Structure formats: C-alpha cells, structure tokens
Amino acid sequence: MLQEVQALVSEFSSVQGTFFYREANGVADLLAKNAAVTQGVFALYRAAPDFLFSALCHDQRGTLLPRFVKTYHSCTPFNLI
Image 1 (cartoon, helix red, strand yellow):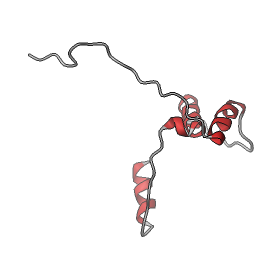
Image 2 (cartoon, rainbow, N blue to C red):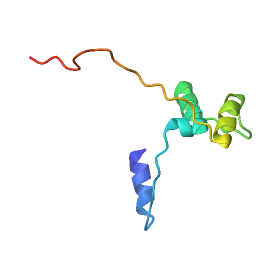
Image 3 (cartoon, rainbow, N blue to C red):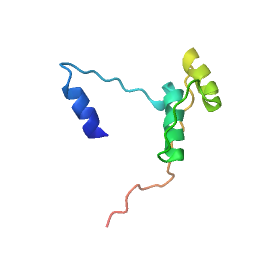
Image 4 (cartoon, helix red, strand yellow):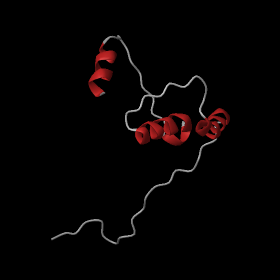
C-alpha cells in the first residue's frame, strides 16, 4: 500500500497531508475496524451501514470521543542489568 501511495504522490507537484486522531474521524475508524474484521472481503455500500450511524452523528457535530490509552503500572519501565 505504501508503494501505491508513493506512486500516486509522485504524480503531483505538491501534496499536503493532515493527521487526525481516530477519535476525530469515527466513521473512518469504524470502517477500518470493519475491514480488519472481515479480512479481505470487499464491501461497497450504497448507503451508510447501520454500524456507522452513531459515528456519523458524532463526526457531524464535531464531538470528540475519549481516547483510551493503555497504561502500565510498573515502577521501572526497563529491566536494567
């Protein structure tokens, strides 16, 4: 996929990218998660599937959902020898 992106980018004189945390684009996040679960099954939607409606509403309103980050409760992150 990276090679495909690089090939597309090389066709333009200027390319700009913007990073968004997945919480700011719930629809894209859910579509990516759904694609990972279906493992290669191609899906083409004529209308938004039911599992997207909540995310569509949040994205439309600009609602940011909480970010869950795994935390570790260790005193020392590395075992030094």
